[in-house]
Image (cartoon, rainbow, N blue to C red; front, side, top):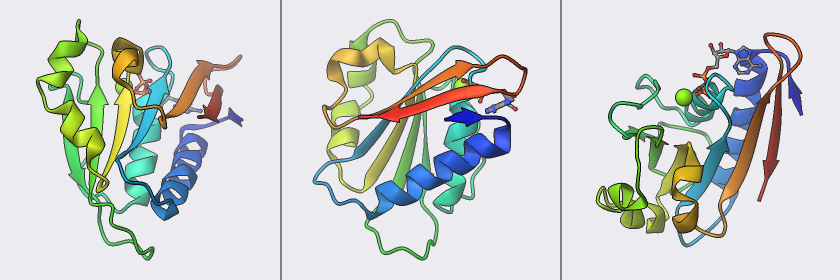
Length: 149
Ligand SMILES: Nc1ncnc2c1ncn2[C@@H]1O[C@H](COP(=O)(O)OP(=O)(O)O)[C@@H](O)[C@H]1O
Ligand SMILES: [Mg+2]
């Protein structure tokens, strides 16, 4: 789709969040956010987290690799409890992520995991990962966003 504003991008993310919440799976739900700096990955994550009732501020975790947020009260019945927001911009090797307990995080069905710069760990992304591709559009506030799996 073509997003014409930050708000529109956040609404799209909220829609995906609600959809994922209803889906059953035996492992974590993983959303990989591809796109250059300023493309809207963090903005999307904010919309996604807010839709799930996250109250803590969702900022870019660039300097700490990841942040964990608690899913708040939402009207949908779900076992989802935690949102992990990774920003892999600064990592060099997949092993750095494995050391942080990545495998355990993605195997826990109570987790939703959003990953910025997922190309850094392509080899260990689970096969049911949802891919979101962001591209800058023609004007300042335009972004092309494609969701696939
Ligand atoms: N349609 C849009 N969707 C998302 N962000 C937008 C849009 N238009 C403008 N922006 C702005 O672009 C910037 C995107 O930054 P951010 O989400 O941090 O990108 P990234 O995490 O991909 O580096 C924000 O300042 C946001 O307000
Ligand atoms: Mg970011």
